[in-house]
Amino acid sequence: MTIALDSLQNVTLGREGFLALVTVNRPQKLNALDDRTIAELDAVFAALDADAEVGAVVLTGAGEKAFVAGADIGVLAKQGVLDGKQNALAGQALTLRIENLRKPVLAAINGFAFGGGLELALACDVRIASKSAKLGLPEVSLGVIPGYGGTQRLPRLCGTGVALQLILTGDPVTGEEAERIGLVNKAVEPAELMAACKAMAAKMVSRGPQALALAKQAVRRGVHLSMADGLALESDLFGIVSSTAEFKEGMAAFLEKRKPSWLRA
Image 1: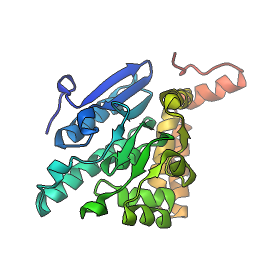
Image 2 (image 1 turned 45 degrees about the horizontal axis):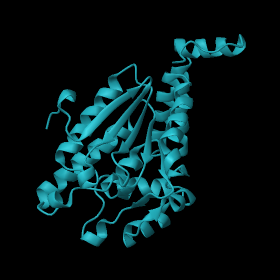
Image 3 (image 1 turned 90 degrees about the horizontal axis):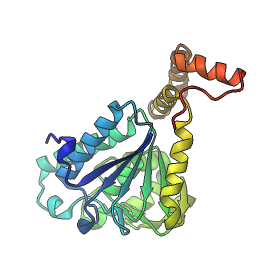
């Protein structure tokens, strides 16, 4: 499914200077993911990756109840082997798109983040949750398993024991508990959520944009490598960034005690 940005129905895209705000907008369905919503999100993130004026992205859900409450069960209930696999591949492609974006992506988890919704958040670089949010992978209670990367990203983030507990029980955790187990970076009061995300995004964007992209690449690729191969990757990327005009400007700005020219208003 090919989606043009001027035909979005289930996703809204806003801009606040350097910041792109992506909102899943199906509050009547608790922002559940169907085929069109996945395709719209994929189109939006592809466009944001190519937009030089975007320095960071915040992903959230419309309304006060849900971030993304999972996949649309009405759709899942009709799938068989082949379309089930295709559904998983489409969701995985979207989460890889988010994970590999060259700009920081922050999830503002404002409510229910279940199933595919939590898997979207796991693909983001940073997760900030409302203390009252509920997060979980309840798929086994429906006779299915996480299919958009949850079985792979959750153990890498929180460890195998925590991941298996959450996946095999299907039990949700609050935003505060999610912070304790390392599932989210920070849990804040609901009224403070967007301000906290925007403040962190602003700090990231004040750094060198090419350095941000290469640092993300070092971490995202390196986590799947041996230590020796990861260090080799890091040294390669360190060499690449050292050849950029951004590197020269950053060093000069520090030595001259001034702000670097890449700062955005």
